[in-house]
Structure formats: structure tokens, C-alpha cells
Image: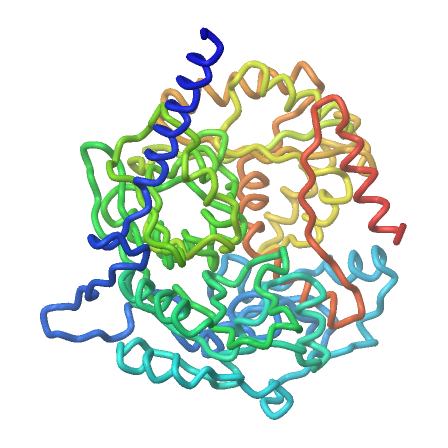
Length: 524
């Protein structure tokens, strides 16, 4: 009898938990599991014009169709054989990099005399024609939601930024299958309508945020015969409200990182979430890929920042019925959505934690005799739980790479100072240029606390033979994060291919990552 009683109690508890989870799935009042669509908000003039964000609907007007980033920004070797970075958007823009050519040729055995330029213009006639679902198109027209089946719009959203995807575009090769349409919802309720129509007409949807995916998640299956629609969330780019008392903000998921930070900064706040791709990646993309940022030590990863997620699925809208920061009942529906890569639904709105802009920010850097000493220092920093907002250890190869990206000095005095620094580190302090490594640091917060924190980290570094290497190196290392991605396009111009990898290893096996990296470098 006791056994039956326990079993019944377990079933009752399980059913109760299932009811809690099911309660997150909103349904029609008549019990139908369809989606309730409401009208989007419009401005006072009644206009539904394109929302003002950095990313336009026609992304190809601003960004490369076959490479990384802005069309006006790229690395190149000029007529004198010197490397330079074009455009005006970055601190490195317009500068000459005198050491990059030697590093490039010596590291990869390439020659700047042998160039393999990318295909300059998309051959629209080679793009597979769209397989349109006419009934879906007619119903979509009735909603007034913008859409396109132009070749350039479709190809731009047929890929992310994996090496094989970009390489194919540069070589002028077309994808076997691309989206048949691109649709631009302006708000959550537009997405509801689109998903409802897709279910009704058996149409495939692929959510598209910033397009920075490196997991092949945006590729269309060649065998798919149904109409494929790319749902571009870029026009859903507003901060809907800010709760200054609870320090949370409710934001549309299509907003890209740089716009989100800019708009929050105008109000005196920030998220602190800065993935390497934050210029172009979207908030919804961060949720869908379970993103991490450069300042996670202080602000956390995206799963630590998210309070609430609104998702449109074929079965309904998933959202929690309250804004409570935490619930003890489980499993948490958010854990299914985070990292789901758009397979479960379309993320439309996110409520996340925000913080006041830190009053003080300070960069720093530390040089170590070798990689082992650097890892040991970072391990001790982690043990003492005193990691700064960002701390990154560059091995010797990365150190020389960073040195190759130094711009040409503007004065004899600056050149003299740089020479003194090199002499001091290598000759007086005995650091071997072929072994040394550098950790870059970023501290944020209250000024007094930052200075105390900085001293603690530098004291730890000193016990492992570390030597403070100045703020400039730390700042350069941090800022270069946003331009390094452009180098892959330069490499492919000269038959050098590159790919980014992220490897997570335990503290007692740091060589695992190094071995994997070297194996890839040597083609093993």
C-alpha cells in the first residue's frame, strides 16, 4: 500500500510540473493550439516604415556579400607592398601596418605577388530560382509584412560565416539550395502571423538574426522541396521598456549588439555582454546560440543575463506568466530555448539584466616567460575569484601576430619609446621573444575597487614571473578583437584559409587545446 501511495504521489507531482510547463504555452480561448496574432504598434503618424537601426533590410548595401563585415573595411596590400586597413569605422582604419607582410609571408609561406581575388559581383542568374508557395505569398501580402524573392537578398541569408560557406561565395560557386523568400517582420505579432501562415501552408522557416553563425545553421537542406523562407528579424530592433528600479530591459530580439549598447548607453546603462561578433550579431542570436562574451567574468554569459524570453513556435507563443528573476519549479523552459539554434521557434523579445555604465575602466597587460606560467597565473586568479571583466592569455604565436598588427609609428619619439620597451623586456628582464606570452586585462567598476582589484591581479602575476606591460597593449589587444575577423578575407586573397575554433578544456589539461590547434595548423 505504501508503495502504491508513493507512486501516486510521484505521478501527482509530475503532472503538476507538466501543467506548470504547459501553462507557458499560450492558446486560443477555445482551446485551439494555434497562435493569437495582434497588430503591431505603429508610430503617431501611422507609419510602418523600416525601423532605424544599423542594419538595413538590404544588407548588401552596407556589408560584404562574400566576406566579413562592412564593405568599406578590409585589409589589403597596397602598391608599395605595405598592409593597410581601409575605411573610417575602426581605430585601425586608414593606418599602415609595416610588419604584417613579413609576418604573413613567413608564417604561411604565401606571397603577396600571387593573388587570388574574390568574385566581385554575385551572378544572380546562377542562383536557383525560388520555389514559391503561391498561397502563402498571397496570404503574406495581405498582412503588409515586407518580403523579397530577389537573388541577392536570398543568397545573403543562405549562409553564415563558416570557412566553406565564404570560400564558395568568393569562388563564385552557388549554393545548391537557398531560401526562396526573405521576410522582414517589424514586431512580435508580425512573427506570429508569419509562423501561423507557414504552418497553414506547410512552409519552412529559418530564423535569421545577424548572420554571423559558424555552425552551418543557416544552410538550406538540398533535399528540401518545400518553400523555404528566411525570417530576418533585423527590423525588430527596439528597446520596448527599461525598468530602472529592477535594472532590467525588455528588448526586441532582432537588435544587434552595437545598437543595443548604444541605446542603453544613452540612458546610462549597459548589458556588459560583448561577444566577438557583437557588431553584427543579434540579441535573439545570442539566446539561440547560448552566447558568451569577453566580459563574462563580471557580467556572466547570456544565460546569466536573461530573465524572460518570448518565443513563437508552431504550437503557440511560449512565455512565462511573470517577470520573476527565478523560479524553483523545473525544468525551466528557457533552458530548452537557449542554444536551440532556432530549431524550436523564433525568439522575438527578451527581458534581460542591465547595469549602470561602469564609472571607471582600465586596461592592462602582463608578460610571462612562457605559456605554462601564464596559465598558472590565470588559474590562481580564478581560484582567488578575482578575475577582471576580461582576461585573455595570448600564446607566443598570437603575440607575434598582434605585433604584426601594430600601425606605423607617427614620430621618432614614439619609435624610440617602443625600442626602449623592447630592450627593457628582452635584454634587462630576460624574456625570450620566442617564448614569452601576454595576458590582456580589462577592469571595470568603481574607481577605488578597480585599483584594488588591479593591484591584486598584478601581485598574483608577479608570483609567476609576470611583468606589467602597460595599458596600451591591453587596450590594443581588446580592440583588435573586432578587426581580426577581417583578416580571413585577406588570407583567402592569397590562398591562405583560416577558421576560428573554440575549445573548452579543464585547467589540468591546457595542452589539449594547443595540441588540437597545432594539429589543425599542420593539416593533421
